[in-house]
Length: 225
Image 1 (cartoon, rainbow, N blue to C red):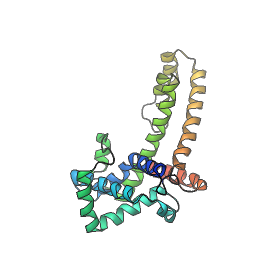
Image 2: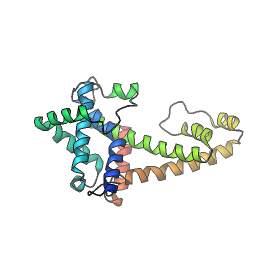
Image 3: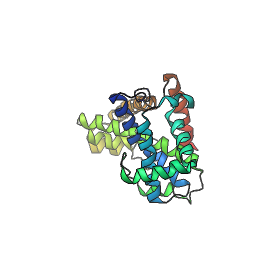
Image 4: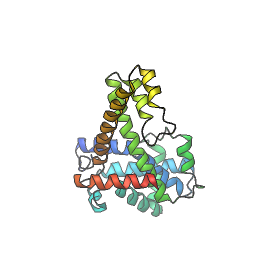
């Protein structure tokens, strides 16, 4: 998707807007960690993406080793360091909502408050990783719902490593009228599809396919830190 978002065609603009809608949270989190108030952080986030959309050019991503994650972090740092650009962004952000800044959970808000001991860079990286994984789960959920397996998705999702309090397979089997072996096989397929979608989603944020595995390793390291 990074490659699709480069250039000035309508398709490139659509791809860039989609990237902005998906990955605004890491940028917002980084800005908040600078000690910026809620309203100003929202305006700055809107202004930052408004300028990004206005430029309609992601060729600079290649300078950041082809990774959208690195490009946005470098860009927002430069953006905040420029008082003139910052003031313009606040003004622009107040009058334009290019991304929907909603849906932040209580946990998300607490982890980006100034009291958080983690650095702004680490908060950005963690929020990036979580956002990417949320996007993967959203796609997987849509697939299961389309196939009429919404209940199966809700149960299998709880077996993922990062989900707390995973239920025993016997409970899942009883609830879905399946055998435990069938549940194990279903989860094997679920996890395999999850891994495929995860790599696809990472692939949307890099300019070179060979960088996918490096980004995946980085993602895992960030979440384990």
